[in-house]
Image 1 (cartoon, helix red, strand yellow):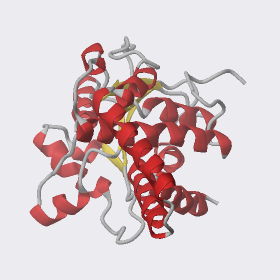
Image 2 (cartoon, rainbow, N blue to C red):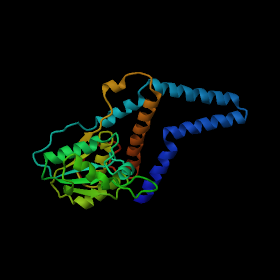
Image 3 (cartoon, helix red, strand yellow):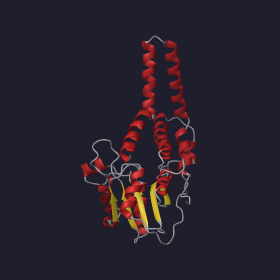
Image 4 (cartoon, rainbow, N blue to C red):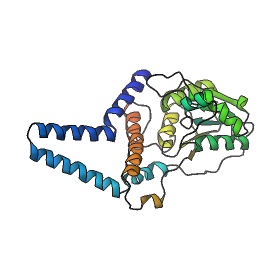
Length: 269
């Protein structure tokens, strides 16, 4: 079932992401012109153009980031003792790292930086890096395999880190990491991932009986980000990313991978 969910989620997103929908609409407009339905084609093209103009001016994606990133507080107080720290992959590019022989990071590098900082703050804590490959094909390059390159640069002893390299999505991050780390009842574990991803991640960990302390990083939203302007490409990319996360929350809840649609922490059972 996990493999079926992985492939289905990838395919559904490829079909429903905003750029795919735009292509569908433009293709339909062309067909209407070929079928000599000029008025319908004009209405459709006018609607598409109007939508693009609205998207270029209004920071719709940023508005949608806000609820996700405010779900958990940044820099929450941590206890004197932390038993373990988990970081979810998504901040290293395995292909580039393999080709160049060094840690090649992306826009979510704050995950790795925060993980390293917490590892230095809690030298006795267990460390887990969870990151396999989310690629549909050519998935032999696993993010966890290249994490030691980054940790060495950040002066963290890579031998402390348990590398989980089999996961392909957030659900598998939690299940494979739990098998590897064997957390015990009463232990305090800190989870590091992007702020927008934290609600889904916490929901998954709670569903699998592993309560964690959220440590959200890589924030994209701020009041300044809500200002009006004109940035079609920028607003489009933001909308694309935030829609992916909201649809992920819906898919995980519908498939019983989280207890609630918009997780806020672990409820007692």
